[in-house]
Image 1: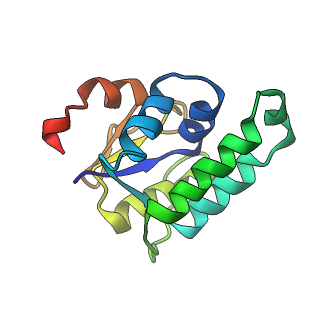
Image 2: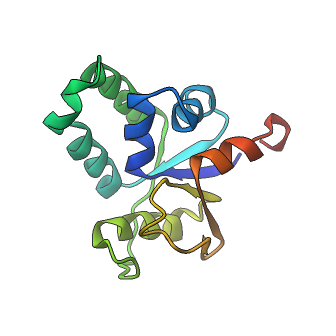
Length: 141
């Protein structure tokens, strides 16, 4: 089973509109088509970002966020990175690379092309939600 890391922007996008991030979470993660990798730092970021008041303007955002976060806590595999990295310009995003290094994830899925300019990190492919969805094939899992 593939090991995948979801950048926070993918989770936020999935809760706002029914697009590629929504499909990845709803039809792949929830249906156990890949193993979501998570660390305490990334989970804390998910909780902090999803609790921002600016998202209250979207219908049922808080309810949907709580449901997704519950699924993540219950189903994701936790890793505890020991290596600290300073590679990305947005220092907060280095926790994703640290998690990739520790978990040996197959993919980082992110919509953040400004900070994630690498296409790969230590064997982990960095890919957009659209590209991940389009290459998805149930027979590969």
